[in-house]
Length: 293
Image (cartoon, rainbow, N blue to C red; front, side, top):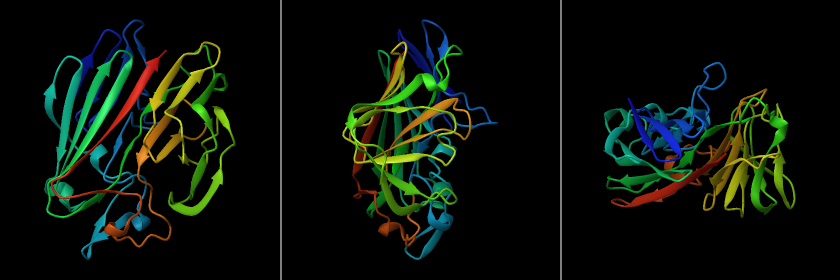
């Protein structure tokens, strides 16, 4: 099922499956601003990543001696989320632990997704509640895919990814064959703001930045200044990614968490870079996406 919210500027649709935003339309022009999940390229729009980001070593983890199988980016993106509340410009959906999730992740939780519009900005707020009686380690990430180029009059070389302050970001390397953290790092560039875009730049997979200082990372159209701006402050990791070959969309992905390392023990409570939520506690985050185009 789909839910629609709108204001004077934007019309947004959200699917109950995965609580995934599937359309952002600029009402003035009727333009679609979000990737439309072409199955021949990449069949998602803006999935949420829970209870972990990336891959598990061997596709499994263990907890209290029991082994659990898990696919890439967890399971929340593939399950139905139940509507909680809807207004004209806001909607909230919830995924609650059940028999199916317990087979994949042995913790009692609630995962709330609230979409709210403010002018040209879409806010996607997430709250995770630990309903169990033990500490719950987990990861969470956003994965929105923005259409780029913005129109047929431009090519991908007409765009840059732009930090709002000069950066010297550290890249956390992952294996092209297994997607696991290798333990190696490199400096992406020194004291720059702009990353020029070109076809083929993601043929090796995504790029994971850490130690960023910027508050925003934007896709900017050089000749017009039109942009999509993503608020990244407070996230320990931010990724950029698109499918191999010609770029038709660009993902800006703020993450709380990392894939397993190649040296990972596989024991869930030993997994680093996780949020550790006490029984009865809750955790919140928000992603602001501004469509100034």
